[in-house]
Length: 347
Image (cartoon, rainbow, N blue to C red):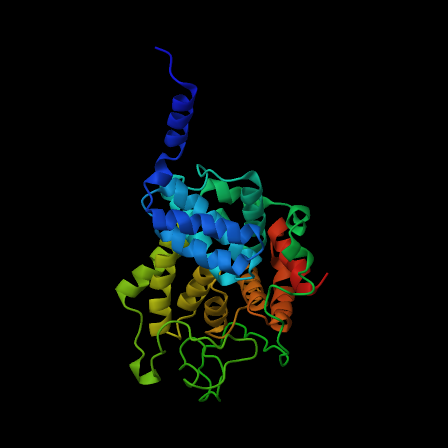
C-alpha cells in the first residue's frame, strides 16, 4: 500500500519536532517569543524571555544548547556582558557533558555571531580550558576579532563601562624584605610576615570597590596555613594548569577564595584566587585578589596581564595601562594579547 504524501510529511515533521514536543508548551512559547523579540530588535526583551525559556529545556541538551546560544547573542546585543559571560559558562558545561552546543540546530548566522562575540569577550585562557568547539576561538587572529562591532569601538567604549578618572596608579611593591615594617598606614598593602592593611580603609587606586568573598579576618584571627589549606592551594594550582569544565573552574575559584580570604597575608593564595577569577571573567574579584599581598612583581608578566585586562574590563583604563606596560617586556605575545594591548593602549 502506498503511503499518502501528506502522511509521510507529517511523520517527518513529527520526528523533527520530537525533542521540542518533550518541552512544556509554556517554555516552547517563550522560546518562540524570545526569538521573535530578537528579530524585531528588542534584545533586552529577548534576553529576559530566553533566560526563562532555557530553564524549561534542562532535560533536552541539544535544545538547551541552542537556547543558551541565542540567549548569549541577545545579551551581547543588549550590552549585558556579565550575563553573556555567565551564559557562556552554562553553555560550556552543556557542551562538555552532552555536546549540546555543537549538536544544536542553530542558524549559521547565530552560531557565527556567538563565536565572534566569544572571541571578543572571553579571555583566551578561559577559552583554552573550554570544550574543543570553543578552544579554537582562542587562536583567532586580531583581524578576525576586529571584525566584531565591539572590537571596532574598543577605543571608544560604548558597551563597556566608561573609564573612570583615577589617581596615578600605585606601583606594585617588589618582593618584600625580610624585616617587617612598622604598622602600615591605611590602605598600605601587606607583605609576607606582616599584618594586613587595616580592614575598612580605602583600597589602593584602581582597586575594585566590590567585596571579594567573605569579610577578611582581623589580625588577631590570622593563623598559619594548615596542611589541609596547603593541599587545597596545590589542587587549585593543578586545576588551573589543566583543561577543565566551567563548573569545575567555579569550584576551583571557590576553593582558592576560601583560603585567600582566611589568609590575606598569603600571597600565593591571593594570586591563585585572582587567576581563577580572571579565567571566569569575574573582573572585580580578579582585581581585588591580584592587588592584595603587596602587588605583583615584574617577573610575573602573565599575572600582570590578567590584572591589566581585569582593570580595563572594570572601567579603570589608566591603571590597566600601567599594569599592561609592566607586563609587555616579558610577556609571550599572542593574537589575544595583541588584541587587548590595542584596546587598553587605545591603538
